[in-house]
Image (cartoon, rainbow, N blue to C red; front, side):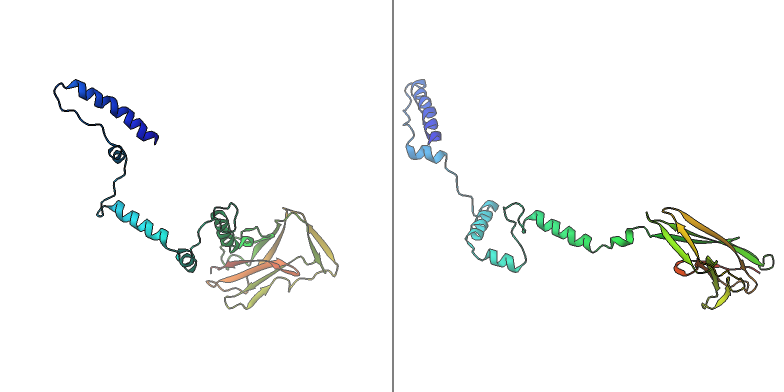
Length: 232
């Protein structure tokens, strides 16, 4: 209504000026109410225009009552306007990422409690030149707690050499005598213990690969394996 009054107030002075500016000219009648309203009317879009097609499609969707049921059948949920609702977009995204990361095995990413390492010196050797090699075994405590190792005898380590078929070629403890006395070793957090022992090579054959495995006596879970291939 305000726009119509503004239009009439602007049109009337112009019409009056036109009557006086052109002497002898034919007077132009003032616009009627219908003509003034028509100037502000929105024309209907042409049926061939894309606006007409979009409007008709919108009207068709607005008149359909089966869309919520169809959306439910197609597992399409309309996001509610209520914040923190179980069906809100934030809740659905949170559930998605929670289920995705729940399938990840985070335990595998954690550091192991201990680290075992076996080194053979020298790493390559000739059976003609060496009758034995040195095995260096280390056990490291990666945790923040003490590790207690109990021994029934004076033996602290075991070293076994096997061939490609798993047959025992040499057992380090066979030709050694140990005192029958109990012992305890405490491994502090972030510390390690190291043992150096000689490994005989008299039963090895050149060119064949053997596995040398070392562990703490009575604790086979602290094992480390090192392959060796002696030369002629």
